[in-house]
Image (cartoon, rainbow, N blue to C red; front, side, top):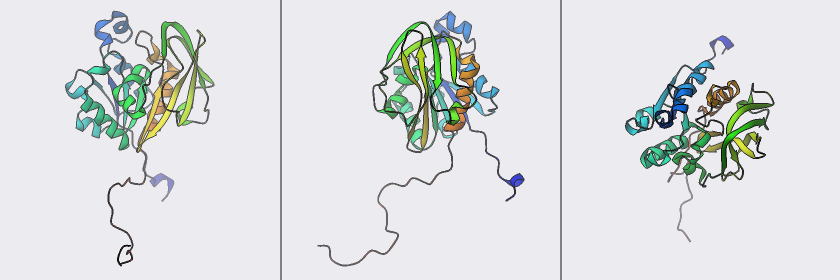
Length: 254
């Protein structure tokens, strides 16, 4: 097959999920994100060349994550904060199952406490926090990782909420970013996992009262993560009782 006839990779189908509650209750948030954080995240992905991007929010039927939507989602972004408990267990479990089956999941900021992420991690996912206009510097600690491409040695965010260690998560498969805050804390801010056939990336920045999702470096990382988390061809997973491939010896069992 010649290069010009080689099949071209298809665009991943991305769904940006957001609880979309703060914008209705806090003018500071609605002023920053007049169309919602999900719209800003979707715009950032389109800015990086993704054309198949849709959004879903908590108060839509089935939280906007119907069976058809999930079945046609290659990468799901998840931002939640004050309404984790309002997400139905049934929908959360469907998200987990789709990850096992190969859907990519990017969990943003306070989504560390979301039902799908906690279910996939198997831990409390708790941490320290402080909202006090800390400066955040996200150091790239895995320069060769695809998620870190194009961002330089570090990303500087002038104002952000602090998250601090200990972060109660399993040891990441790969640690891509480590944050330092002006108050002195550090935090594992860019963590990858594989669960079943799916890839997961947790990315820390994104408190609702700061314009973090307009930051060029943050948008670059999220776009990189969407490409990385998209499903790739793999051998099928098989489970359950199986017939032998070869003839088994006959005779009485001892």
